[in-house]
Length: 601
Image (cartoon, rainbow, N blue to C red):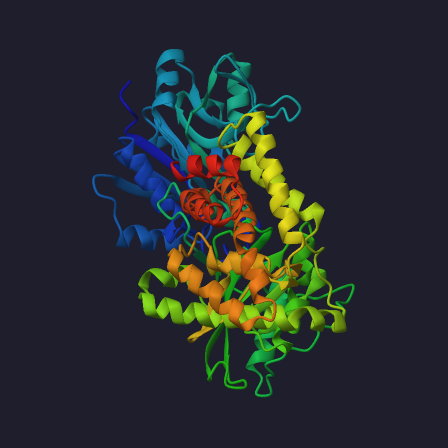
């Protein structure tokens, strides 16, 4: 079959559920990765061989008209038809009957679609239906019941297997099944046609992608789901606050912005009052909010613009941005971040300035230190600068380890459960399940041998000097305020082996420090710690424990959507694990075998 030369794009809807984003901007003109969805739809149908396009308009037509005037599509003639009263997806076809003189594509402009049209065209050619509709089994309400490629029902929630995606190829013979006047839908027209024994084909297209942009949450999620497909994997994106933040979060941000804009703004925020049972929210804000890529920690991160202020020299009367963290209580340690921030600041350790703590709303707002982590800066640093910076980090580690535990006891600081048999066993299972079993398909005998060796490592660490430790002290959790390194992600802080933190920092696969520098840093730490020799002696065991935990994390994270890049750290971690095993006084052959396998993947 020759591909249809015409397409009718439905762009007249109100976008009610997306207000206030759609008050003045029609839904099809909302950007997806900085390009209007309508523009992407037009380019897609053009790639299918379409030469003529008709777009229906009703709500806020101006942005669409102006955009198409500024950016015409090469080799495609685009016309528009205005509906003074909205007619629905079926009524729109009746209104445009003069355009529909041959088979045509009918496409909703407000969905995100990525598909190969050929399966739909093959079904059209083979079955000769009145329409061939694109279906997905991967998302949506799944109310469509289909058998042998023919749709039996569009509204069967109990037995539906698929979702209608709003893209179809139609015969103009659908027009008699549309009501002669007023509002009507294409689904109602299909149902009337089915009663007259007309066939409506349903086609699931392998490898396709569909997302409905019906709500702000779906709009944000569509960016995340399409990042890799559209060449933006690992990138942040900016959307209006009303799309990203809940009404309550918008209220909190608005209150913070007003407070910081006040001439009497203080660097230390007051403790928030208990929220009233009923809160009148201000009108939603439309200032831009940057959505930061996920970090796999049951938290979401958003960068906010804030007013300029001058507080104790921190911001120097310049524009300030903040990081809003939406945390989930499913991870108990997330509740501890604010209290730990205040505690670490009293120890003189550099942490982000806490701007707002709203525990009942599961929201924190912190000073934004920018996107540059130590991990991202290292490739641009020379060897001398890296050594100087890591010596500063060793000093911070020593301060936490020497002063932290006694201060935490005095202030009764809530902490996560300390390192003990249960936590060591959990880290071991994490490594064995996700690396040995899932990734390497290891035999039960190898699993048992590795478990026995790791138990011996745990016994060594259990008898070693303890401290208040960060637990995840690595280059990705170090930001900068000017040249000053600042620690983040300390919510998992707890009592544990001092050597564990030292190994996390020095044997960090993200940083991949050379072995001679690793040895010098361990020696520098040992010289300044009262129990330095004992800590240095168990350092290889701590490195083994930490690297096995990190390998488990990389294996898990790399399987999550948008986080496949974590797999690249596995060979580096395995190489460091081999180095730690070589430094261990007693041989560990099972772990050595696993490290060699992982280093070669």
